Image (cartoon, rainbow over all chains, first blue to last red; front, side, top):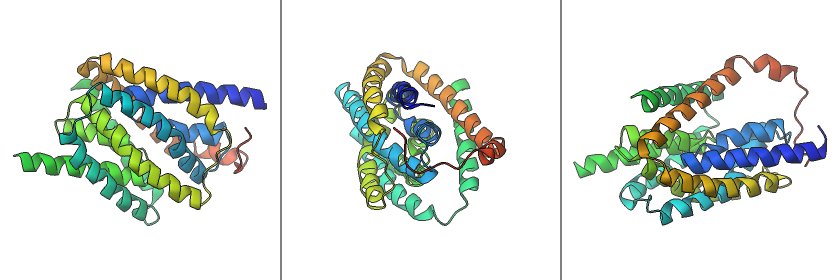
Length: 121
Length: 139
């Protein structure tokens, strides 16, 4: 793949990643990681780290629009947000201690169950 | 009752945060946890995820820059179109009925889960057969 083709693919992937992250309020990072690995040729760790750099400005843009539209509620946001921060520290600390494959399969199973519940029930 | 709800919201955040801290897309799990167990409306759950991601991501980026894991080169090729489509999609989400958004989100999660299962169990050989990935991006 030459440089120009790669740039065009990255631009197109950017459009898709942004649309998903904005429309669903998340999930863009999960798609960014394989794009960075397969198109940009990054190693897994770098792809995960760089995906956060990419998703942050996109998320800020979306968050501002959600807030202006009156969709953000502190009553939900404060307790959940504090939980997220505490969980983030725990998750980062646990990463090196648990089997990655086991976590990824557990994560996929939870997503599948939640997806079925949301789509059909 | 109010206290119970606050605890459920905090626990949902905690679990989403654990996955997020492990770099696995915590938001994708946080949103359904908030809607299914916390009774949070779909749009509000999505807004909570977006807002709570910002401080987490800022902290993580500082850490990753120190560890020299971030590759800046080429990132703008994704960021610029993504920021534009993200803004448009956020406006579209605001106009979409909550039930439609919830079901679409469910479909998106099922696709992500199937992709994860596939890449865990069926793509290993294909990955191993590939040439080793190099660290520097080529764009």
